[in-house]
Length: 207
Image (cartoon, rainbow, N blue to C red; front, top):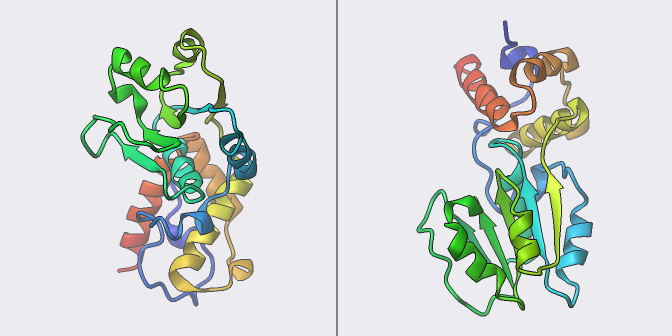
């Protein structure tokens, strides 16, 4: 049986403004993310004079979009597209860097049109690697795999979200690590599924 929320966060004196496991605004995302890779490394690559493609590869729910959004906070003047939410057409603008979530929703022939914009850098998320396309287009690229989950990182993310919606001191939040291990054992590294479960469990236990 999976642990309920009140068996995961052991503090009983936290006052919540709202459910900590819902969507996170752009303004708050950097306060909640525990980066799988150093954001500074990506920022340095994108600030290089030579255009590059950064590819985030992994199954659904592994944190690709969250990292894309977090990185975009350092380049807010650049275009960002969420292709599972809006029209799949990428406008041809003068953006030096283009952020694209769910690039596989664009047909391959149209993706090549993007890659041949040699002066543009891209940050993309994808379920399947597009490395062959980059090589055929003679583009510089770096690929980052999103799989696996660390219990310690999950603890930090949950604590950050609880702090965000309650202002309760993060260092005083007591997390039952054994309960987190049960969640990971059940959901594996599907972080989105873990958050969805915690959202429903919090709603049920907070009534």
